[in-house]
Length: 174
Image 1 (cartoon, helix red, strand yellow):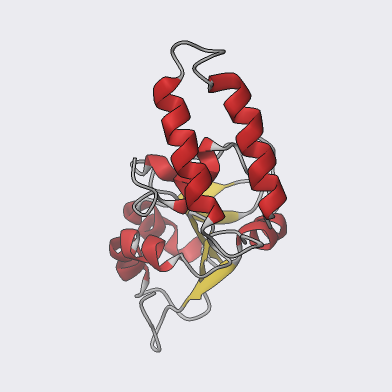
Image 2 (image 1 turned 60 degrees about the vertical axis):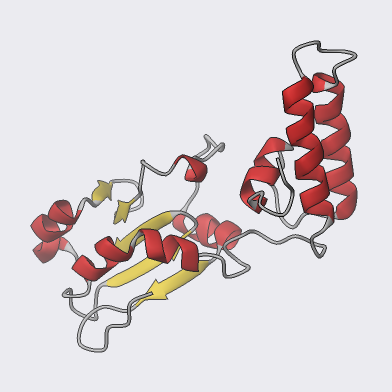
């Protein structure tokens, strides 16, 4: 696998790095940890995985450190393109409805009760604990979360950053 074409998220996932910011030392430690599992001298079936780990290691060492969360770096323009159809459908909601891109999830909050059916038609689901609507593109495997813990909306914003998407009369598509 060529390092220049490897997605940074994929490289981080291969090395099992999930906490940000990431230092050069953390990348080296993660690489050594994974190499111990997949090195062909230890694991005869690990040759392909070891090649991928080497490519991921090289890709991450080419980055500026510390590596911040992909979403805090402003890389969610890629996600905005994926969600462009959904965002376009939400543009007709009044400006009092807040639409945010947090991580790989689109969150809708505010006085949403009158727009319940519209949000369902768009594909949004109600999160009873957070008292917000959310949209997530389950067809995108690269956005799968490895965290199984419950996070508050504020913790999600802290970890992944947030990008407000305007609705109503002064709408801007993200």
